[in-house]
Length: 616
Image (cartoon, rainbow, N blue to C red; front, side, top):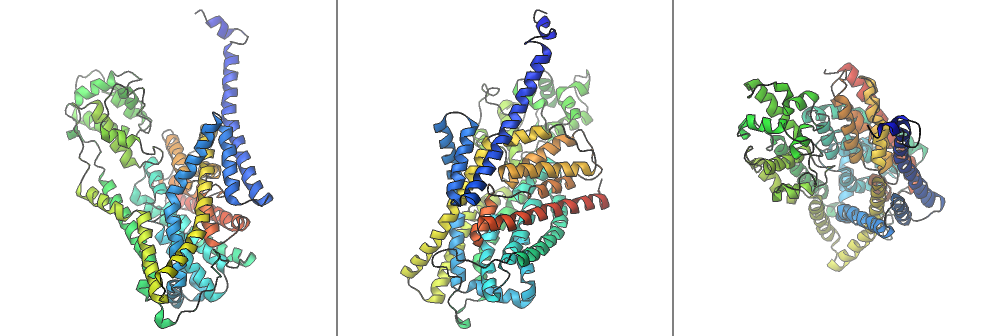
């Protein structure tokens, strides 16, 4: 009562003034991050293209500029850049180094030539790019795009050495096949998390993802042929010893086809086996709650219904992962005044409780300060909460629930035979180890074919690592630049820009999901992050809107959007440019428009399928 006159009368403390000030603060929260993004784009492009500065220096300087614009202690912001650079280098350093060794050895020992001769003998020289595209398409389903590109680039270089033409077409063919399935077909992490956020069955996501990806890849290949004719690019050396012309090897000294393909097939088999085993174990979802896990459902229901809003129980009841009906079930309002639940109500209660375990923000340090956490909960909470898989998030929240209410919920048994197999394969399927083994095979083959000494082999490996080291530096600097854009809160700013959008219940939803994902990709460079955030936003929109088709099409629209706008804050851009021997300007004129074509094609085929086969 005392303050109401101040809020209703004109003046600095009136409701209108406060609301206007709040609106101004909200606009600033959006405007400054977007201004920061603009500064980042101008600084990178200006230094690399305008000032002809080395890409590594341009990216690091730009990362520091963006980091300082975030605010705070300048020393701490510089440390953040260094930390992000180290994290990026740690993620890709070994893989790129091994890929550089594999590529040089395969070219020098005749393995790449052997594979290319075999492939051209099957497809013919005119259709060789189709074979490269198909290889990338299939391999990128279980394996990350970067790894697929590393493994297939030696074949593109060897093929160009044999045909003396179409080098850009071969590179773009590999990129076409690898990029499209990387963003549309599980079990690649991005599409897998999108399907989970939108409640789409993984099997259905695989089928529809392939139906959208296959014709899009054909369009991408046609664009590659067109662009190769418009801007033909000669293959350039990747290092000081790479002349682009390998010393001829007699046919009888060439490795057999099986030995030649081993450096490519071995890592794919190892990584693929680990991925499939992990996918099979994840489908068991051992942390899922069933009625038999709850020792006293009625008592648990009463505890949740009487919980304070700021308690762990209260945060669970109001979870954004739940529908409004499920919130009412957990809060007790759907049960009326009955002291106990009937069988149907118990079934609904268990289903709602299990769904609540997918809540992203259940844990808060202050709210949980009086709860003793188990070592398992503590270890799971340290994981990247944005990229954590749904099955792992459910396991984390299930462990938290067991810590919170040990007398009401039984401990889950995680280590099934399928999970143990996946854990056993995790070591061998690690990309760093898989490519290390492939590099060893390639080196042994080189020593055998060329009859070289170990000292000569060491010189060759050192030359490969010198060229690989430059790629590692540039890619890691690009990762640091992208991380600083993320720290600038560009993602939340974009989310707030689209927060009130609904897009209707039909094609508008597809366009909205595509647009959100594309803007996020341009802003921070990671397709996976763009897919995760965009699908989370679309999942929230779907709670209030029922589309006229299956949500799987929203998932493929989001995946297609995540291809759009790849430039210098995207690691894929640098992998394509540096492993292919292209300049930054050439990559902006080839890689970037190629992904634009793939993204738009994916959206168009998604729209067509949603109308022809809505599955609603």
